[in-house]
Length: 547
Image 1 (cartoon, rainbow, N blue to C red):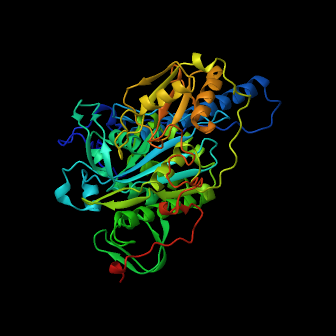
Image 2: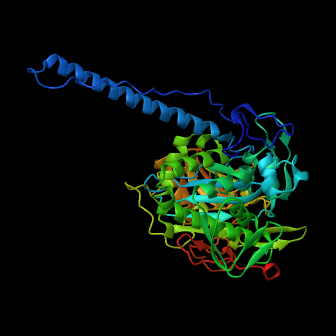
């Protein structure tokens, strides 16, 4: 994985214990390139002795133009081969291995679409370098776990980024996943969310996140131990802070109180430290990772470490060798375009948080009811966790708001989406609401028994002309206008009853939160949010690990 890996080294794949690598994930093997040798530029003869011939002058200009063109082509060729080399460094995998995939996020009124990227940290020990860095040589043949899991949400208008971590010990329903390479089927199970990576690869972790959060995932990026070290070195180290001297013998992190710059293996020790921070659990580690990422972003935005072309090259090599991405991000150009998209967001509008959680039997943590749902709902509805959103853009042209048909002639389909990884579905829910809509005059309402899982109640319509019809349905049951969305995935006005409406025939005014109070449009306190421009934040050291 490192820049010093032997030629022909292949990216380890979690599926094959014997070390085989699926075809699309094999590392590019450079076949060699070439460049122009130095040209022999002959100087002209000494001046004097008559007027130079115009034809000779034209020949000189033509020769200069040809040489310049060849030099440009040579430079472009070298660039092409280098980009192809970087493309070959990237590992690639399928985005979602589950059977049920969520629809992509809807665009906002200005036609802009939010983006959700799942960031994964693998604890693979399958290379010699990873064993040296991660320890546990006895785990050398164990498929890796996704011990770091963060969802990076980029707002539709690119004004803000929200990042939500899920602790590795979170109890989750891991859906049935099918490996695209050997077609092995991993049946649905309940386990810690970090084990989802062992069920066919990162695409199963993506499927698990969609099941747990109701958030559609557009891309994933996964990095391993060795990659973390390479990238920390490439940017010249990352500033961090601790409130006391800390020593964690498990991760080998040792730092003095105050500010330090971590790089190389020390950066990995920081990211792996669990016992040394907070209460010694994975929760403290998540916060340390947030502070590290915020600090690295500030470093990159400052640009001081990347002015040297050599360092830029080192970073490009380290980043591409460290990464496995979905096929939709599987080229340097796509990653470059993504980077340009992300750098538009000011540091002060980057917010990192942890899923609100609570301890549960069996060594698990589970999402904290109410707060976790609210946090995920903000992401689903493209609302910034920092609470600093401006008013959303209005549609460019007025949309229909009045029904085009009498209630009795509007076809409506009702689906029960109350089931989730956290709660069983409420039996018969679609039938109850179908009867209620019938009583309100929607005579062509039918209950669809197709299994569905959705956190938020929504009404979708297939064509702009039917928006007024969908609004009429929403008003009759007390559903807010914000829940009415256009979708090319439905054939008629479709109501999906989400986990936020598990009882009653009128949508609850508090959105199903149960508190009688409308939640604020920002991350709850239990999410432990930290801003990207907070350069004063320090990690609280566990008293048992102070030296």
